[in-house]
Length: 90
Image 1 (cartoon, rainbow, N blue to C red):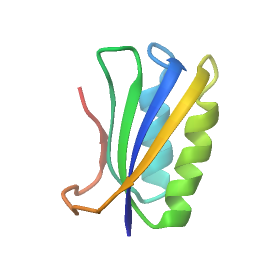
Image 2: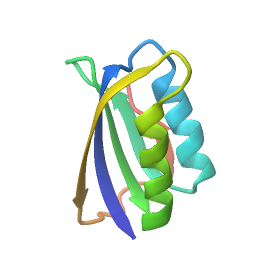
Image 3: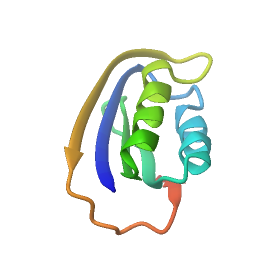
């Protein structure tokens, strides 16, 4: 079990990035959240098996149709097991 903090920058708000990330993460069985940040980025905190986290990163590098991903910043952290599911945080 790993915990991954992802910051995605580019044209990532207003293009259903959070919605699609939520769908992908739930299909992968990950726990955590996705949210927009005040500076126009999208933040993801996800916990789960490393191979599933890598699949989520691959999605984040491309994003949904209409998104333009300029940068994906990754940092691994110690898992906290604080989430019951994956959701969109507002």
